[in-house]
Length: 106
Image 1 (cartoon, rainbow, N blue to C red):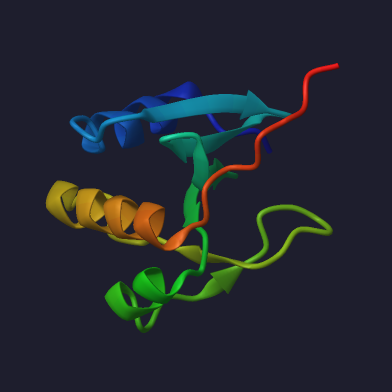
Image 2 (spheres, rainbow, N blue to C red):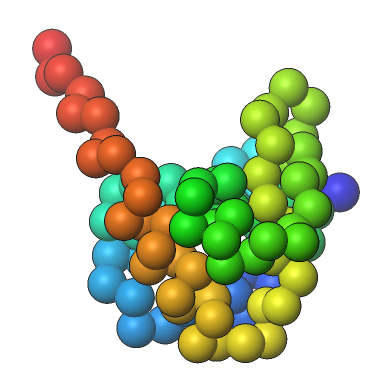
């Protein structure tokens, strides 16, 4: 079941103020970026994030979920109402991730 725009708008609103935050629609779901790095996404109306060390530390009891068939597990963010927590989570995940790969132009 595709994710509705309402949940996307809510999550983006919760994360407002994070520099470089963007989203991209992908097959009925949404991928979330910070500074060009994929930090997480919204899949079947669930906010899932990459399982970095910071994410695991901030959410030690988070369950691992598969966003779609064939994908690597991600961590489910259950407390999407806590704006400060979400901002801290996304900022720290961003810091854990390597720089995005530069695509060669032909």
